[in-house]
Length: 89
Image (cartoon, rainbow, N blue to C red; front, side, top):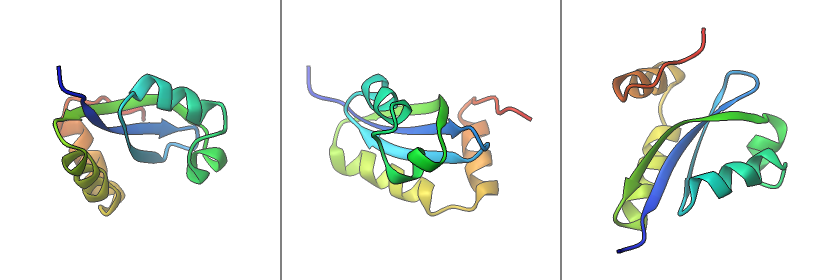
């Protein structure tokens, strides 16, 4: 089976979102939780994985990450809801 590449979205403690790319979502989430992930998640501790999507190519996963990060919060919320994610109030 071919390696999968993932785009994922984390919910942070301050109710912000963090979008990222990895080949192993659980491992990457653990890295973020340990304070060893991205600079953003060191300042905004992640609470849970809200969304993940597998892609066949690294390029496609990175493109999904880029597209998510360059949206307004309102559009990010719409994207997540459209993909069946229930967001906290």
